[in-house]
Length: 355
Ligand code: PLP
Ligand code: COI
Image (cartoon, rainbow, N blue to C red; front, top):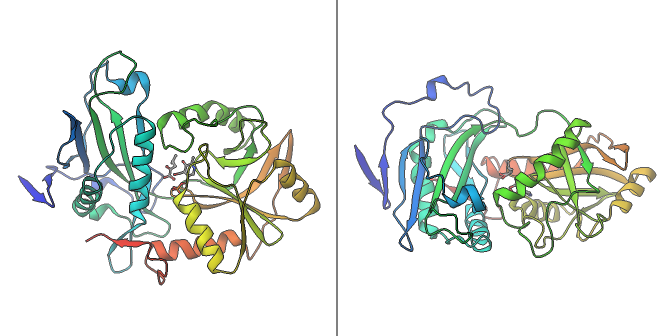
């Protein structure tokens, strides 16, 4: 049976997998809901989006995604409040960033209605999958890739946009110890670092594996010129508190313009916390760690939310960060999650109800 909602065709799954899910013990992004959204681009046009049962995709071996890596994605979450209402956090920011990534990777930009109406229909169909347990949410993964065929090294003529959903718990388990990278680079000037494209992540896996072998969970990337300035982590932007000032790197064409990052900056300002968006050198951070003025470091991102960094490694030395009772990280995490889960007033107008 097919239904139509806001121009989105809905084909329901015959059976549901939901009864097999332990919602009290969710890991991150490893189980998927009963449905997904699919929208195809062909003959120079985006077709109408469809909600279909979650299923594998069949592709020709010459599909350009396999050879030339035209692939982009987004990361969002849906939150269910105590009364059962469902909320998104600044979804249009993700939509705009998806199209920024698309443009850089020579992929077609998606119409806003396909994104928002498609996502809304999908969330309505799978709303029972949105967890209500503390710290859990429904992770939303919109992604687009080149499904068109051929070995010619040029943009594909066909693409698929899909949204998949994964009820998820926290991204990190335990403390987050990071390594400040001196050799490898994540992104280069004029490159694709600001785009959320698959290759940016693939390129990090090897250096991150080397770091993991030494006991670090994430790499903190530094500028590709001289590895002098802190840029961002593998899956989050980085904040550094020196004395009572909160510092973060300015975004540029090497850094992902994080939605959590800009929200944290606004909340910090609202809290009266002094913030500085400026280049922060590794030297400054190491000196602050040595003289005791480095109070906190934390990562910020949709998956990671606000994740305190317990220690960082640099040039073979580990620097532990103090455990503060009244940390900025704890305060800012509470403020942002209270808005996301509809537990507090949303003076910024960031919450978006899914109805
Ligand atoms: N930086 C990178 C490389 C990321 O993958 C992410 C995650 O999306 C972020 C930063 C944080 O961005 P956002 O807060 O929009 O999720
Ligand atoms: C997110 O925070 O949504 C991300 O996309 C990070 C991801 C690599 C897990």
